[in-house]
Length: 133
Image (cartoon, rainbow, N blue to C red):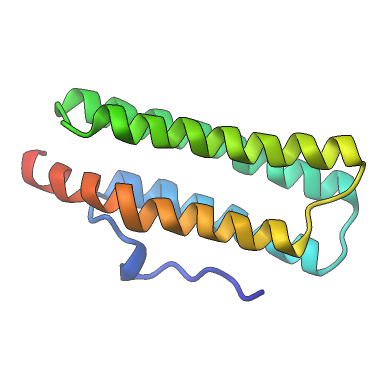
């Protein structure tokens, strides 16, 4: 699988959110390469844990901005955040239970998970914040 490339397509036009997204894309690419290169399971697991931790932090960052600027879509956006975190943690737990590492299918799932959220809910949030900040 090829790297995710950060470009204007993924920009929500809010610098601090874009910086977070760049970091998440970088971690995704690191995970992707580790899986492709057949790195050790412990190393891949550590990258996945870092990706989850950074995502949780980023979601709280977005939620803080939504609250500060009275974003009407807060509840729906936060629910999507919760569902995304639950899904990635479930994947992580399933891999631990099975004793296997992240697979290429998991990488594809994570790519859709990450880009889908940015190109959907986050674009709406970015448009709103661009007007009120």
